[in-house]
Amino acid sequence: MRKQIVAGNWKMNNDSKQTKALLDELLAKRPQSTNTKIVIAPTFVNLQQAVEQAAGSNIIVAAQNMHQAESGAYTGEISVGMLKSINVNTVILGHSERRAYFGETNSILAEKVKTALKNNVTIIFCFGEELADRQSGNHFNVVETQLREGLFHITEEQWGSVVLAYEPVWAIGTGETASPEQAQEMHAFIRSLLRDNISSTVAENTSILYGGSVKPDNATEIFSKPDVDGGLIGGAALKADDFLAIVNAK
Ligand code: PGA
Image 1 (cartoon, rainbow, N blue to C red):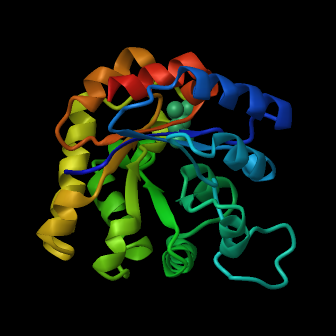
Image 2 (image 1 turned 90 degrees about the vertical axis):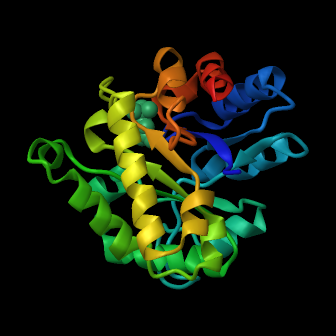
């Protein structure tokens, strides 16, 4: 049985006080016995307080990024060891904003993936096509290349620490969602890539999340598709009630 996961990417929102308040509300209102894994990714500076606050609950605290080197002269960067030292054992890698605004290429991401998995940190690996790719019918190729170049170098065993997040760039923060059918079509394609290139066990066991304008009113329909194992949520993760409604939709 694949893990069902709803993850909130808080991006560059919420200072220390706001982080505490939102997490307090999530802790108070969350479903306590759910099969859905609940993940939140606050900004780096608030990770430690969030880990301490969420300790003993079913909310997992993840980082939004990390550097590919384990240490060294990389001013302003955060290493995997630093995350682990505060009990952050999950990291989002390859978000489209990192790719678009911070120059993260497939080959840089391949390094980040290597470093995270070598250190037993679970990755939520994001990828997805831009609008022009979809309009030209190139979306399957783009997604396949992102996966092949960024991820397919890992060992079969390491796939146990990988969650995929398909996020079409044209649907992120735009209010425009892929239709449930478009999401299912791509997720089924991704699973077939895993089957053909890795193994049928990995294809069956790897969770594939959908991200891009998931809201309480469209989550149930998207999540009802057989190859959609949850969501990566941006805007709607900033309100406890909306985020939890999405969690409860899975
Ligand atoms: P959104 O963001 O839900 O605001 O579209 C999704 C994401 O960036 O992961």
